[in-house]
Length: 197
Image 1 (cartoon, rainbow, N blue to C red):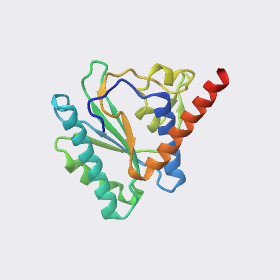
Image 2: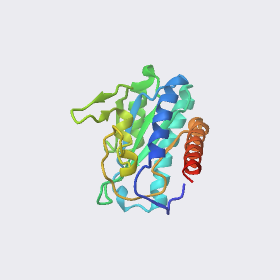
Image 3: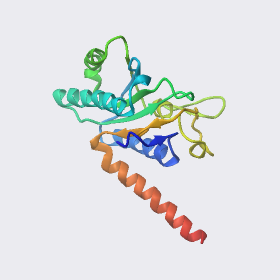
Image 4: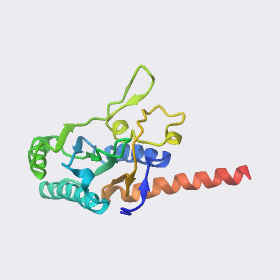
């Protein structure tokens, strides 16, 4: 993770890749059924490297829980920050089998004291608001996209500040699929440019 590189928002490629991985997880039998929000106390005071390390520890704990309970480690994560560059926090959509959800919630709440982790069940239900924007667990997680990603899109966009390092990522189990999706989008873009020349 390049913790010194400032990233202002998710790109269109990021958002489309996240959407693809969300559906891909369900397709491979590991639907993302837990929505986790991590608000670490005094997180804004940490260095970019310390923030990356803290987020990595949470993801490592999630992986250890999956390994112990014998289910695949599958998740997508995204970092958010307020437009004033405060209030950075982490969202994770993770695969947690239904029969282990209560146990996961109990253990995860012990990873950080003081109710710094909120866990809710997540579904693949997509609703449409009066303004025509789509709403789902994934749409909520990907809302800090740049204006070009939101152009002609039915996703709600919320402006955020600058984060140092990656804005989003996924479990090792999804990285190959992520690379394929991003590579295919880049190839389509290059082919389009060639046709325009």
